[in-house]
Length: 201
Image (cartoon, rainbow, N blue to C red; front, top):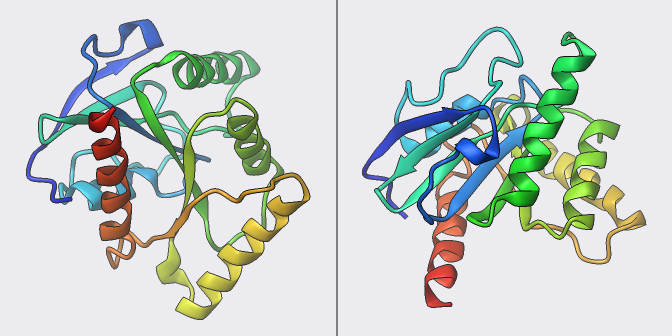
C-alpha cells in the first residue's frame, strides 16, 4: 500500500463523537512513551501528523486521521501512565473500552510494545482482554533500532512465547523502527490485506 494523502480529521472525547461515515478504522494503542506518534508519522510519511511529545501520555482523545480518503488511522490514548489521577485513568479506560468494543468500523487494533522490555503485566492484560473480547489485533514491536536485528527477533519471540500459557494461536506481529522505517511496508501491506478483504464481503 502507498499512502498518498494523510490528514487529521478530528479528536473525539467519546466513541459517539467519532466520524459518522462507515470507512474502516485501524487503531493504534500502546503504553505511554512506546513511540506511537513516531510510528504513525513514519507509516504515513508525514512528519508532523501525529504530535510527538517529550511528555508521556499526551494523547487523551480518540484522534482520527483520514488516509487516501479511504480509511481512518485512529490514534488511541496510551494506557497505564501512572502519573495520572485515578479518575482520569478510569475515564481513559472507559473511552478506550467504549471505542474498541462499540465501534463497528474498527477493522484491527495495532498494539505497540517496546521491544527492549520483558513482557509487562499491563501489556499482557490488555492483549488478553482483546483476545477474550474477540477483537482482531496484531502486535507491533517498536524501537527495534535500539537493538541488533538478532536480539530484536529474540526478544519478540520470547514475548510471544509467553502467551502460549493461555493462547492456542498467537497473534500476527511486526518488528518496527520509526528511525529506520523498519516494518513500514509489512504493516501497510497488512492494512491493505484487511481493507481488501472487507471490501470483498
